[in-house]
Length: 444
Image (cartoon, rainbow, N blue to C red; front, side, top):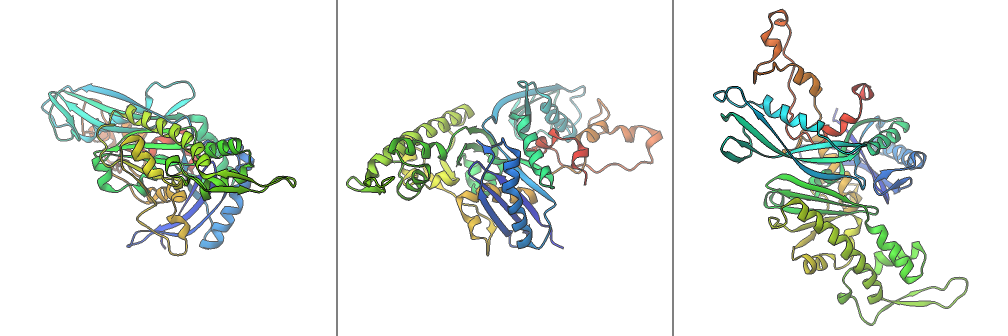
């Protein structure tokens, strides 16, 4: 029987549920549904009951379409407090004439999860950037080399621990098992970025309703990520106030007539708004509407480029900017970005997904959910799939001072025990999130 994975994208504007499987042709979506979001603000769960009221009908619809009960799900996590910082670690080896083995690198990587952060924060992911071995600098993989000192450089992705706890509580209240939490910008990147873009250097910008996610890739490594605490909803609010219309009218005007480049908006055209309470209709010029949108989009773009410069790779991103999310559909946005930043820009939809009867999944609003489905099946080069055993067990097996040699093989009184299977460790981006929860929480 083919394995079916279910994912939930808890967005500020929309909640998306997908179920899919992996075939020889690719990742196949067999059912999808979505509904307006409640109880979520800027990517974080703030009202558990409202989230449940949204989730329950969606889960029932998903089960009816797939013909299978939904028991466990993969969920995305973002929120306005996600941040990134650089860190390094080094070890001195007792014998420089022995080869560097994977155990040593894994221990260095795992120890970074204990890095000091602000109260209430947690290290979500640790991404290796490069290694120095004695006089050899910027080594991609030091395993197999010889040396007396290893220095490793990392990017730490940090978030509020309470955000993950609230998400977990909502999922469990719906009677589901949370199998994995995935940092949403990383998942979205898997769905929309091409391999050559990741290698050359690219900026991914996912413009959602409440937040804008930014991710910088270079040389096939995640170099930086950030969540900007505003997105398309603030544009709608600006239109509502500037044009003195209702929120529903403002959203409709943004979608149907909005442009983020005032100079390209029609000069002699206007939108007719019906009067309230029998009043006369009003006209709002296209160019006036575009000037409101442009001002806010310029602010969002400034925040994006600030994060890009913080990454240290601003001058090494020839693949430009890849846009996705509902806010990327604003008219003339690629041209506006080219004018403001000098970077080429394209709007990206999920690729590598077989949709058949679920054509909505091909839209920019479903990029994150599609990416989570991909990540649920495949271990990527920069991050591993779910570990088959706990890291605590792995490192308890290693005899201190003996790279590659385990304590079990060194002690005669346990020589009859089988060696435990090793799981891949390096780049385990998604595994760090699961450290929020005890292993007993995930038992069936």
